Length: 219
Image 1 (spheres, one colour):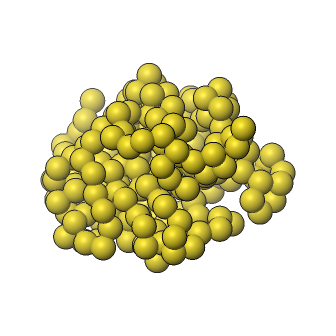
Image 2 (tube, helix red, strand yellow):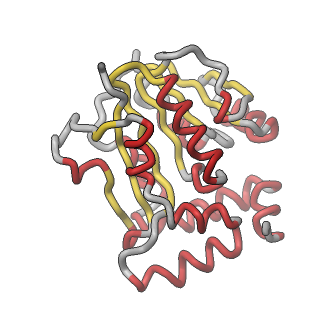
């Protein structure tokens, strides 16, 4: 069930931004948080990027520092209005993530930041299947989202945050093995900078935050 704090955070941009900055302190601040999912990736000005569930464009702005071809997709007209005001250099599409209006093999990189926990399990699977479809062969999907803490000291803070600002889908994500789900869909480990299976998922903030990088098969 959504709380009044969650409703306020979406209604008032200043409150959402303040919450984001506060939450990102656990990984060294917002600037570092926005870079986590991009570490080790090869991105140039021609890389075709989709910022999935782009919200008001915080991550979109960072992606434009790497590429001049960035498209933000979101289902919220209000969020896209804010994104266009905040980051007018990007292109934007209003659509549901599970029904993306793009042809197959369209993007080199699909990025999403703290959005998949908003999705119900079946919806999540549909979205990941769509990501696989719109990626070019060998394209990369990178995401950052919540994870079940490995350090018990981080449980109280995460529980309080989820209780105030999230719904039951965030708790469901904590019990979901995203890597296994991605592999069932057909994704492979991203070996662009390490070649080791363990590099596919990196945990931060006592394990309460996960960064995943996987790629679409070239076959």
